[in-house]
Picture 1 (cartoon, helix red, strand yellow):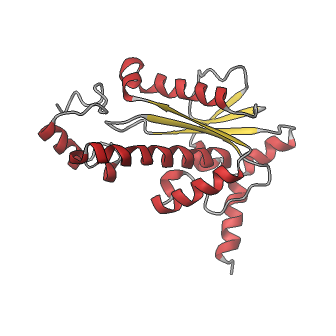
Picture 2 (tube, one colour):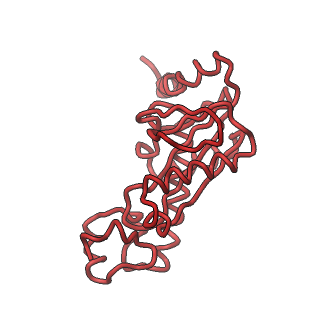
Length: 211
């Protein structure tokens, strides 16, 4: 019978299969990019990019949605300590309202690529196309955060960064409950929106049906 450790090594090996094939083709620096916060009614969208070492095998790295908040916080610190390079772009609600969430996310990807201090040979991005990666080739991977190690690591950086931002906003606007739902459209959030009206970090284009 396999131990938990053995099962985790097997899971990570499968998660790294895509990168393994790319390393064998001669790619040295592979950057995974993912975002957090495309769906919420409030707050920014956060895009993160990370280049992990070829032999990185951090226990627990996975699609951020499959990892508990407490575990994500721990993984965040380990990922940043081990990364060859990483960068984060925070695109605010005003930009989202101005150019729409898809274009705001793409703008974030471009910022992330520009701010990496190591130039990747290839970018793997979660389900985005027609993006400006400053001439660096990229592959768009459907469900990349669940099937690609570097994208999964980026998803954790993005999610933890955004959650921390929303916890800070909760201190400014406690009536909306941002600490619990992080700006997503839960019933409690929508009820609070109807009772108190929007605050400055609400996305005007997202809340038209509620206020």
